[in-house]
Image (cartoon, rainbow, N blue to C red; front, side, top):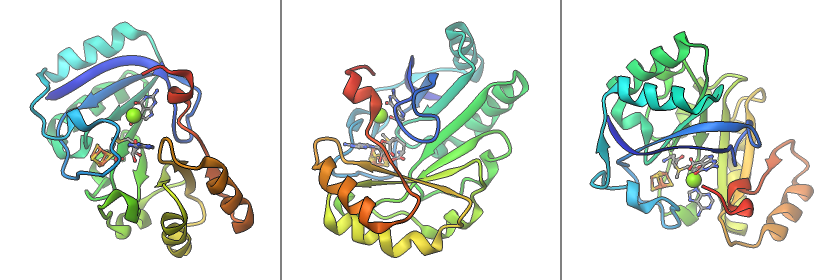
Length: 204
Ligand SMILES: C[S@@+](CC[C@H](N)C(=O)[O-])C[C@H]1O[C@@H](n2cnc3c(N)ncnc32)[C@H](O)[C@@H]1O
Ligand SMILES: Nc1nc2[nH]cc(C(=O)O)c2c(=O)[nH]1
Ligand code: SF4
Ligand SMILES: [Mg+2]
């Protein structure tokens, strides 16, 4: 599979925020979000071709119970991803996949929880809301928001998200977080405001 990097870090986003985790960042993405913080992963050219066994071996060496598979867009390498997920699942790892909401996550959901990003207008891209209906209580939806237009877009979608699915709201790094936090307080909905912890810490 096309791998950009494998590294240990504090999970900086989503429901597992704060938990030491092994990150597998896969290469290649079908979107081009304007504010993407991993642009080098987008075209898939800066990647190492690794076998599933090699990836599994490197993760095992890190000695952590939690694994986050991200990218790029991990779901575009579905066959190899499934085979890696089966190995991780069999060994008892708790796995979470970060996905951009444009590819059906159901095939990977037997082995992993899913954190599904719903792309807002500032990204210049669009996710497909229907996939949200397939999520379970162990999954989450994430809105990365830059300001008022994104927050209003998110607000319009909240009623389409099953009530048992956690909603995380994360400011685009460098945007006005206080404005976003104030908006969320006024919204009076149980969404989880969160800042990217790894960037505050200055780690990967
Ligand atoms: C790099 S993406 C990889 C996974 C998948 N392609 C996606 O977009 O969900 C991981 C997460 O980082 C978020 N992200 C990327 N750039 C960001 C930025 N500048 N500020 C805040 N979050 C960002 C994405 O929205 C996504 O939720
Ligand atoms: N520490 C850390 N946590 C993360 N959670 C999601 C990430 C991602 O890029 O998908 C990420 C990342 O890049 N670093
Ligand atoms: S979908 Fe994810 S990896 Fe792809 S461009 Fe957007 S933020 Fe970057
Ligand atoms: Mg990141």
